[in-house]
Length: 265
Image 1 (tube, rainbow, N blue to C red):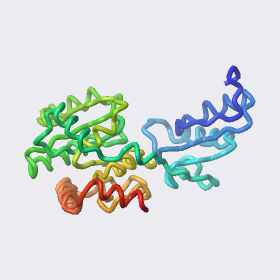
Image 2 (tube, rainbow, N blue to C red):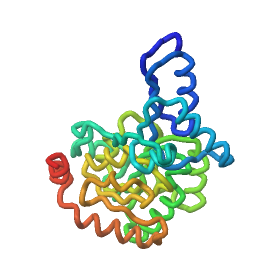
Image 3 (cartoon, rainbow, N blue to C red):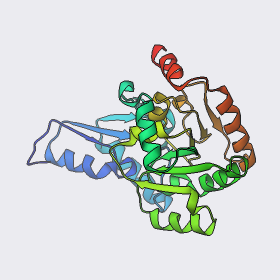
Image 4 (tube, rainbow, N blue to C red):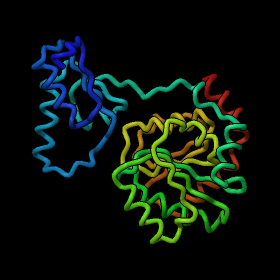
């Protein structure tokens, strides 16, 4: 930071924000922004240590920002902070029929109903529950496939899990990619059963693509944009989730039409 000598240091590492904030303060940066994106943490630390990390963030930041109220309250407590929702350029994610056909053909998904999920392979994304819901849904839709876009530390264990659940032939791991938009177009539905989320950018991108989706009630409700996007309690049964998927599918008139409605509003 000293070698660059920036006027502003902005950090997006949630609880770990205090590291660069302290460095920025020592280096002499006058503006030090803490930007929070998660409403919880996967870090297995003593509660006292977490409290100290939060205090260090508050002590060393000059500006407090979060992507949602829940995310801000998690780190900042009752301190004043500014909410800046995650945003995208909608035009970059518009549904593309040609892109859909090419992507589905390359993955041999032409005759499949594709359930999608975009996100890192971490505990917070709750892939274990995702697999259970998908396995139940496949009983209703035998041609269903699950498309996972993203990488992470749980990749190996999750691949082992789908084999154990005997759904490995129906689950496709794409890994990390810079071409996520084509996978949105290839999907028919999106599931986000997260244990917690500040405001998942993937949900915003997918809705810009017109994808119907169900998100867990632990996701910030402000991320809901389209009428075909709904929150579902994690306490609900897998069967209940599948019934909601069916209902939303019937509500979807046209993905391009729903895109235009969203852009107008």
